[in-house]
Image 1 (tube, rainbow, N blue to C red):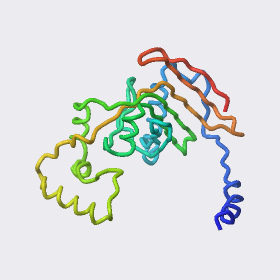
Image 2 (image 1 turned 90 degrees about the horizontal axis):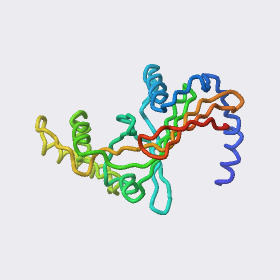
Image 3 (image 1 turned 90 degrees about the vertical axis):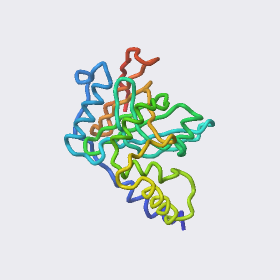
Image 4 (image 1 turned 135 degrees about the vertical axis):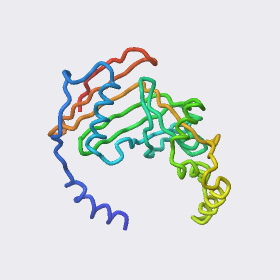
Length: 224
């Protein structure tokens, strides 16, 4: 049955083709600092009202290199790296603790653009996590206490019971403190690649690399 399904679906998938023509990326338009180009692309995605422009794939791995990936939301970036927030006890949090390397991928489909980022990852300071937590909607603050992220639960009712208990504890106006198990991580990039789709799959790719934080970036054009 599985083989039949693959045979039936394969012709459909093989016919899905899009010719990329939205833009190009040449040497004259590529700055020495990759964060300048990232900011330009990100701001364009925001201005054009793309869905969740800060959504990014985060890939982590176990100590023996078994990868896992999921979508998270970028909540800040600067020359020091890219920041997101999560439960430290989640699967990604556990993998970050045991393997301090991660990769990010942004995909802005309507613009036919992709950004790939690889580097080290570590928690941000408690003060930074506190400041962001205070900016969250109250429901999101409570959610950080409600969900034992990535842990098995018997049913939806269990989660709802936890929600009732937490909401009862903090009421409607009591300040919600940041849980010690929740906070931010920063991916400090060692490699940043910009990919712009082009016709005939002859895409434009530029790779930035650096040996250490705050060192100068080296830029290379890659074959598609």
